Amino acid sequence: MKTKSFFHLFLFLLPTLLFSQSLLWEISSENSKQPSYLYGTIHIQDKRVFNYSDSVEIAINACDAFGLEILLDEIDPKGIMGMMTMKTSLDKLLSPEDYKFVKDEISSQYGFNILMFNKMKPFFISSQLMVGKMKQDMPTALDPFLLAKARKLNKKCLGIEKFEHQIAAIDKISLEEQAKMLVDGLKDTISQDAKFEELLETYIKMDIEKMAELSKDTTLPKSFEKAFLTKRNIKMAKKIHKQIRKQSIFVAIGAAHLGGEKGVINLLQKKGYIIRPVEMSFEEVNNN
Image (cartoon, rainbow, N blue to C red):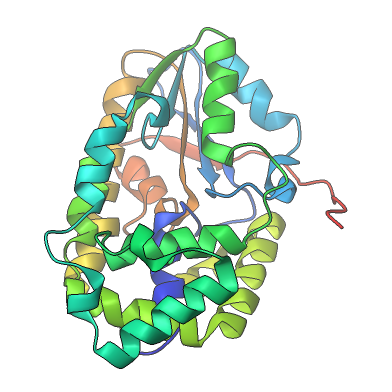
């Protein structure tokens, strides 16, 4: 597997990407009294992605309800840990040489003890390490930040899907393959750092076509892509459709789910909705 594989896989987890020159989309129909909105997020704490224009919060305020990919503040921490751990251990998945390499790299690059991660599924080890290297100017990531705003406005809040759906997709990748991706990622940190910065800049520029190119990776199992994107997009579109029929709703999901033929925007259009991009922008922020 190419060393870029974990980078692309992480794009799907973040929540990231795809489609036109806006991340904010208005959803309307002949029967709707007021529009709903769809917003593409990215699950990081870098201040740059929080500096969106007023149109985002105006749209949140205008809706009766707020939908997030997962209601993060209602997930049982014990349940999460149970789904993120494995019956075997990392030292049994890797050769002695690779295990020593991972142990030394985690210690030298991040200051962590390998024993913290030995029972964790390698995918989540990789994602934890990736997050640890990102800028964390804000106290929380973008998704819970938006959720907190919605709760402060006393909006009805709901999850578009369940955490179990994401775990089921990740489990399509064998533990052995996840372990190899972990090793490859640690061997290619410079390249991955550059790719992530390119992704972030592309997100801020709202160049959705380029985001689509960045998210492509033929080295990942087809079963993962089908479960993590295609099937989840279908479920999300159905849930959004169901909610729109009840009330106006602002839905914030990972931007990777928005665009393309099998994306949520197109799926909603096939259900008869009129969807148009809403003008928005990001102000430049000096994070130095």
